[in-house]
Image (cartoon, rainbow, N blue to C red; front, side):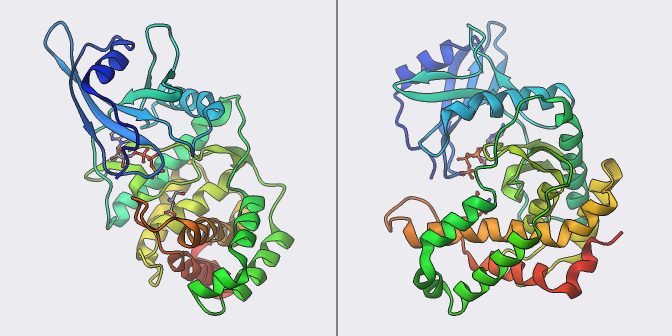
Amino acid sequence: MAVYTRLGAEEMAAIIAAFDVGTLISAKGIAEGVSNSNWLIETQDSQDATHRFILTVYETRTDTADLPFFLNLLDHLAARNCPVPRTIHDVEGASHRFYKGKALALIEFLPGISVSDPTPVQARAVGQALAQVHLAAADFGCERTNSMGPDAWRQLLSDCRSDGLESIAPGLSRLVERELSVLAAGWPTDLPRGVIHADLFPDNVLMLGDKVTGLIDFYFACTDIVAYDLAVTHAAWCFSADGAEFLPDLSAALMEGYESVRPLSAVERAAMPLLAQGAAMRFLATRAYDWLYTVEDALVTLKDPMAFVRRLEFYADPANAEVFSA
Ligand SMILES: Nc1ncnc2c1ncn2[C@@H]1O[C@H](COP(=O)(O)OP(=O)(O)OP(=O)(O)O)[C@@H](O)[C@H]1O
Ligand SMILES: N[C@@H](CCO)C(=O)O
């Protein structure tokens, strides 16, 4: 359940009035998502036409200093025909406002649903959309450090401590230690960098049939290795949810879709197995940390770290490197 902030009807109407999008006629809290509070907003304009928006109130996990990067990026990509929501600027032209000390933004509502069992055709479309974002962001001009990069994984996993990792699964601390050394020794420094989404899981993609209608939740977007974003997306889309089964048809379709728009260079392709190990480590780290330290009565459903331990083991096996070959 992700509505942490309570807003009365009059408060909501006053907030919406600052955006010049008509009169508020309904506001429904959205259950999905864990970081911020979200509402589906409906308004009516002077011609009685209705319009839909998403209102987000940013909670503690989002640093408001990063909002110009996230929100300007949406506008930049939307202007270049990427399927991302535009931000609605307020009557003063600002992309976000503050209400009772919290930042909020109104963004375009996009139709579509998040698929749970993607088909290869859908995976191909996601690969294309991701590559389109990478190309369209090339002239964005703003930078943001990846707050979930290799240093953050190491810190989170060290905070989990060996006994914490062992309580999740016997042998996990050894595996993590070994793989962190492999990643530290080989993490590439010479690959093309750019703006990446960094969290393109199926729940962050809206689809209608085989068409991608929305890429959402850009709140981990940052400047990093572009091919790493493809590795994150591969880890997120090409396995059964528990990570036990690799889905080769989805993998081939995702890679093919991506490369139909932005072909990988030879060095990027050669780095993919290691980048994918890094991607698996990133989600293993955040999930393990949340698994150990989220208070029991929190409203969120915890995500299983083992699902990414299995992916890490898959990517670390040299026999599987061929999934990234041309
Ligand atoms: N532009 C949009 N159009 C339509 N629906 C949207 C849009 N943005 C968000 N949603 C809906 O709101 C939900 C939550 O959005 P989002 O994933 O951005 O929230 P969050 O709390 O930041 O997520 P998380 O904690 O998973 O990172 C989505 O699953 C989707 O159902
Ligand atoms: N998409 C992430 C959560 C946000 O970092 C996960 O599934 O673990």
